[in-house]
Image (cartoon, rainbow, N blue to C red; front, side, top):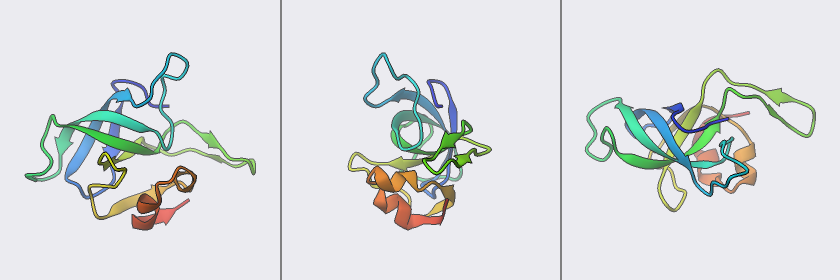
Length: 124
């Protein structure tokens, strides 16, 4: 579960290293937490290298691909990761980076993030 002020690791090669969640898109009073596949508005806290397209304290959109909170599948399997991770996207839901490092879940395929699935190195 991702809420405001939560730090996220960036697992693509866009140039950002850490994000801080500001708000969830489409937030209502009933659901203030973001889960895997939700789009969040976040601010870049750390960068990996000097990149003219991505700067520190820039506000971006990101999709959450891993959470520390376990998720349950219909088959009875529960998945739990060691970190909270996200991928930076644009307004058309296309990733800004060209590679995705690490594991992402197959639940993103049902949510129409097929471009992320094709760039990922491993799908769980």
